[in-house]
Amino acid sequence: MPTTEDLPIPARALALSDELRTAFKRLLRCMQREGGELDAHVSMMQYMLLALIHEQPGIGVAALARLQNVRGPTVSAQVKSLAEAGLVERNAPDPQDRRRSGLQVSAQGLNVLETLRARRRDALARRIARLSPQQIDALAASMQPLLEIGQA
Image 1 (cartoon, rainbow, N blue to C red):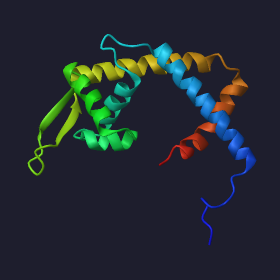
Image 2 (cartoon, rainbow, N blue to C red; image 1 turned 45 degrees about the vertical axis):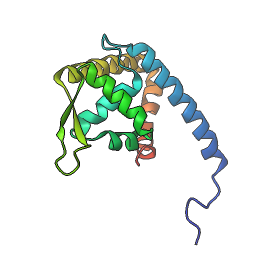
Image 3 (cartoon, one colour; image 1 turned 180 degrees about the vertical axis):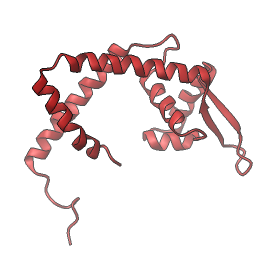
Image 4 (cartoon, rainbow, N blue to C red; image 1 turned 135 degrees about the horizontal axis):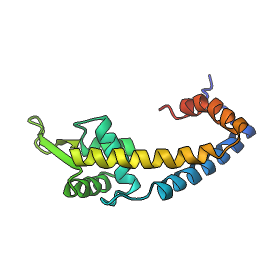
């Protein structure tokens, strides 16, 4: 019996997929530009890692790498930079595996995270506010399907 993975993809879904990827890419670039960098010079990857560590205190580097679908050494270097900047703290090593220590966002890191989130939220809200009422309604109506697409 064929699975949904085996069925052909409708042309409309392929076209919407291309348009959605383009829209998300542009939107992400705008958010990066308009959100700006903080004094801590937090890159987009570091921002995403900070957010994940904040959402999952005690997470390790290997788990972060898996969640981001990035190589471990890449994440390790980013976490090292965040730790050196005082934005992330390492917990005491795990007694079961001394090589592993969990991570948590420091008070300074939380301040950076909240400030950057507010900047990016406000920049995006300003762009949304420039849309027509009909476009805002269409955007609101698309949120649930977009959230469903984004589910793992």
